[in-house]
Length: 138
Image 1 (cartoon, rainbow, N blue to C red):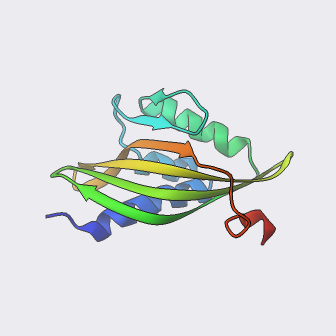
Image 2: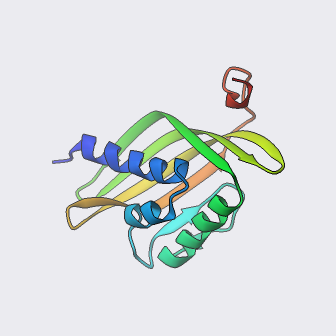
């Protein structure tokens, strides 16, 4: 039986790793497997654990602050795979200024040694932010 709370905690750990720009924590949440896949909005598909971690290093090094807030979370499960989909509100700060965007993400977790590990992250940009969603104006 699926422990939905454990899956949602695994999903939150993934976003905590992003928001903390913590590559060591990111290593712990991803499934170290050649079949793992990551698709950042506007990026080519990354296949395999080393390429995925390098993509996160590149993102963390290119921004001074990165925050993703998630909403509208849904969970769909099988025996050892879980799909978590959510809306992402992304705010980043870099030398070029503040950037706020919205994406929709699908995160797939595999049960590995009794721990949920992310094995696929696919985020696609959504339409422009409405004024009430624009976190950079708060």
